Length: 190
Image 1 (cartoon, rainbow, N blue to C red):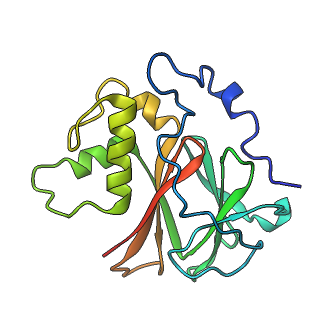
Image 2 (image 1 turned 45 degrees about the vertical axis):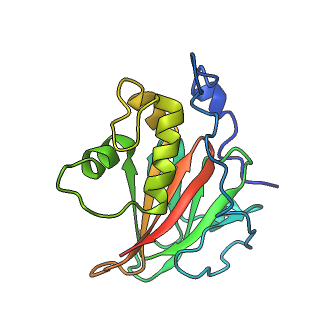
């Protein structure tokens, strides 16, 4: 049996088809970053994210953060060591699994506020590039320009998940961009 955490999302998000243009649950990007399938508790290498089906609810751990229709579960929230984390909210009904010591979620408004600062000279990451494609299709905004009036609608099913390999002192991390029930992008940062 698949984990059914994403069942009924269109019912919860009334108007999934949206009004004009792309709807909230219409993926702009269907990447292959999570195309592999891992067994529950597989001990994936840091940075890798894979689909995991048939996970017993008792194996998920505790829900630690929920945003934009996704929930992150931590298998041992009292630990500071790298461990399995699961995310639900995907249209295929399966979870996604990755390994991290610390996980944070970030909304699209915060992403734009940081990314579009004039003094931000960081090169675009793969997740930044994927976000720009999604934002252009959904909001009609040019690359490097804010989404505008549709930002809240975009944020209903789009979120950044940042995973760190250690609890503190990490100089690298991986970002996963979750959008409309799929993993739209992934990239390691330094």
